[in-house]
Image 1 (cartoon, rainbow, N blue to C red):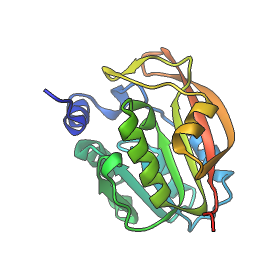
Image 2 (tube, rainbow, N blue to C red):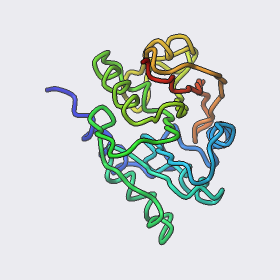
Image 3 (spheres, rainbow, N blue to C red):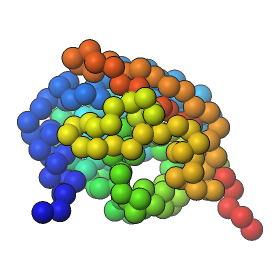
Image 4 (tube, rainbow, N blue to C red):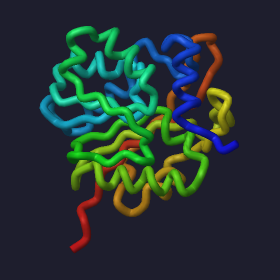
Length: 209
């Protein structure tokens, strides 16, 4: 039987609370820092890919960002976020989609992805991701992508992952995106095990004439 990505993630969020998954953060401090330093303003269009039940959207709203989209493959994950935000959820655009199949209806100033890209172990899926990224991010726009570093775990949520350094990630995204900075973070899971993450900041290169 072929692997069904959507069924897997619906199952994860049916069986576990958001605080019980390994990638949970009480405060996504590094993501917020990188977004703040990306040269965008509070009315810029931001998309959080795989944002699911993450509290990043809460923090962005608190910081005054007014055009935030959260995309996730799991209905259950987004439900947790909407319930938590209550009436503030109306200020957010919610999209249910597999990122490899996403057809953006607009272009964004900033794309954020923490812990989606490393699950794409099939080269074809990574090419699809890069193609969606190119469609979704405007020229000179920014992308912040975080995945397991080379020292990170080989599996997560029962699935194999692909680990990265900055050079490997930049190569995957192709010539349309230039890595302009990277930083690593040791993430402590809710059960206090360590996971090494790599965060890369990319700038969309201008289209060639």
